[in-house]
Structure formats: C-alpha cells, structure tokens
Length: 365
Length: 219
Image: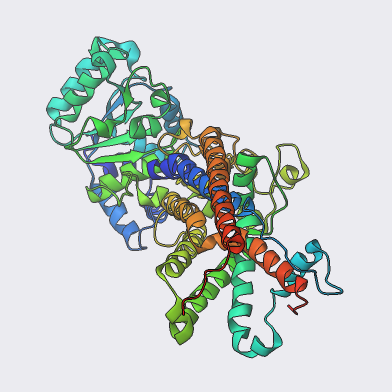
C-alpha cells in the first residue's frame, strides 16, 4: 500500500468522497464568509495540500482548548481533516512519551524547517526567567522562542495564548504574557475564547491549508470571519434588549421567558465571537441559550473586567471618595464666594448710607 | 478595552469630581447671596413669594403672545431637544444601570429602540438649533464661543451614543469609550458654561417672577 502524500489521497483512502469534501469546503467557505466560488478553490487546494506539520505547544493552560478541539462533535469531515494534519508534537497528548516526544518535536522542526505551523495554547510566564512553567527542563519561554524560530506561522489558540487570559489576571504572579508579546517576527493568528469554538480552530487551519496565507484578521489578530461581530448583535435574545425586556435575576419571570440577560451581567455587547451563530456541541446551544450571560471570554483581560454578574453599564470605576471630596470643596468655595459677595454688598451699602447721611456740599457761586 | 477602562474609570471620576465641584460652587455662590432688600409695599393682590416664583418659572415656559410667531420655532425645537435629551439620558436601560451603580437609584426604562429613535430626533433637532443660531442675524450677533462650545459638547454625546448603539464607524467598545469621554467633556464644561442654565434657570426665573409680581407686572 502506498503512503498517501496529499490530503486528497488520504481522504480517498479513508472513504471520504469528493462530494463530501466539496460539502465541507462549502461549509468552511460559508463560516469564513467567503464568496461562493471560494468553496471550489478550498476543495481543490485541500485535496492537493500536503499534510501540514503542526507542533502543538501547551503552556500555562487548563487543557480546555485541547478538550474543545478534540471533543468537537464527531465524526465530521473537519475532524478528519484535523486528524489528518501531521500533528507531530502535542505536549498534553504525548506527555507520557517523555523524551521521545521532545525528540519528535525537534525532528519535525528539522524536517519541516520554515514550513511547520506552531499552535500554542496557554500563556507564557516570563517572571523570574520563566521558571514557573517548564517542560522537559525547558522553560515555556525558551521552548516557544526555539520552536517559533523556523515556523511558517503561529496559531495562538485560546484566550491565554492570545491575550494572557486567566494566568495573566491580577495579580499575575507568574508574569504571564501572550505569545504575541514574545514572538514579533512571525505571522500570528489569535483564536481566542475560553475555550475557542472548535470550528474557529479547524476553519482557520483549513483556510491556511487552502490558501497558504492567513485569513483576514481584526485589530487583535483574530479571523474576522469568526470574530467580526459581537455576541450581542447576533444573539437571538437581542429583540428583547431592543424592547427593553430584561431578566432582573436568574430565577425571575424574565429569565423564564428568555428575556435579555444584559442586566444580570451579560458581556455580549463587547464580546466578539461566533458563539451565537456557530454555537457549541454540534450547534446545539451556547451559554446565553442555556440561560447564562456571556462572560466575554474571547476578549483581553476578561477576568478583570469587574465581575461576571455586574451589568456592563454598571462597571464604571468611579471613585466616590474623590467625587465626594470635590463636592465638599465646591460647596465650601460656593459658600466662600457668597460670603465675600455679601461683605462686598454690605460695605457698598454702608458707603451709600454714609453718603446719604453726609450734609450736601454748598454750591459755589 | 484599555481606552474603555480609562474612560469609565479615571476620566469619568475626574469629570464627575469637576462637575460636582463646579456645580456646587456656582449654585451655592448664587443661592447664598444676600437677598436684595424690599423697600416698597407689594401691589394689592400680589401673590406670596412662593407663588410668584412658581408663576415666573412656569409662565416663562411659553413665549408671550406678542413674540409667539417669531419665537415659535426656537421654542418648539428647544422643547424637542430638551425632552429628547432628558429621555435619552434618563430612560435608556444602560444609563439607568450606570446611575444605579453610582447612586443606588433606579427606575423603569423605555424600550431601547424607542430611546434610540428619540436620540436620533434629538440629534436632528440640535442641528436645527445650530442652523437657526447661524442663520438668524440677531442670534448670531449675540452668540459667543460659550454658545457654540455648549452646543458641541451637548451634541457629541448624543451622536456618539447613537453611533455606539448602532455600531457606526468603529467597534462597539471604542465607540462606547468615545461616548463616555464626550460625556466627560460635557461634565467638565457644564458648570462653567451656559449649560449651567439647567440648574440656574429655576433660580433666575423664580427671582424674576418674585420681582414682577411684587410690582404687579404681568408675566
């Protein structure tokens, strides 16, 4: 049996028809908001694509991102394609292999110099030389720099890798930073979320394989196709917001009727993600549909935004002490100004009265 | 998010502090002034001071019949944008949540779409007020920089609020930050410019009413 060299051959060998590949390509094109003609290009390029070498580094993370991508609803063709990339190193999945896993990573870097993709989940601790997280005796910082050196591109999966995430939350004891703060000379795609939507990850990889370039990104380096709109704008509860119908608590009539969760802390208006459209668990539901407000987990510093259950509009960091002091000072100034004006008025009146009392001057001549 | 955090944190705190300081300074500076002496007996049938003040405040809310025709547009337009501003500021759910977070006070909101529509009408009305000011020769002659600055700082929060709700021009959080910063500018300017009329019109009209009624003059 010959070893297939392209993705098309691998898929054919596994019984995946061209029709199924076309259907998947159309799906990827639609979720990436590409024109209809792009699906054909994706299908052709995916079929011709060689298995992409991928090195998956897991740093300060909870494995939720890996859970998300490996437990996406399956079996689907996107899972197959994901399985059929050459995942040469995955720290979490290969941890029991010990030194052999590290050798596999080094071999993949050597053999695919300049062509491999580095997927990172987890933030990178940099405080005290990065000693707070090590793999095989190597700090995450050193491993990232060494692995990224000859990479084609980097995909930061999850909010921790993309923006620092929960490890970076105050007081950030390990000095956690995002991948983009360390690697500045390579193309980086951020697929944020805690965890990210599986289709956002597979869709971005499919785009990379199909077009050999990064998809259009927003100012935070995220694919616009998945992070171009807010949860609020695409939320099925949006009409209730527009009508002014809000759940005031999680067990009131409004909550039971499925009204807008803005008042119980939903961060949908500032969260850019595709949860409201792609949803989770095979398009079954997403947090708001399950009755909980959006946490805004795809946004930088979402953990330090002032409370998950505090309404967005109520998160003003106003110092009442300063305003109160200013009010007291203003009242004192007003009182002092009035007092000075009163003194001026009285002295003026006294002068007028003194003039009235004084005898009139004798006219000359 | 950094700009938004700055806007609703330090910027809003400083703006509210300046507003509280300036508004109380000016208000108490006027209210604690010594009242002018009354050296004549009131005309027969002159109402009490309170009723006279009330007559001054309410009576001046509509122009005298003599001037009605020429002041109909500015008066009606003035009512339109004043009511529009009050509704947009006080009856929009996110605004109420914000006020509740800093004062503990809360009240029912109007539907967000309705407030949005009212805000658009308010913005148009404000533009009409500016056009009237610029095209009326007398009004233009007596207008000072204060008038234009006050107009601009009232207009900007309205349009930035509309833009934030409808996501026009930039991302929501950027527009929200800009909206809050324009409100901060308004708060800082408020006590020191003509916008202070929001508080002082009651005092000045009331005092005018008292003097007029004392002399038996019609309001």
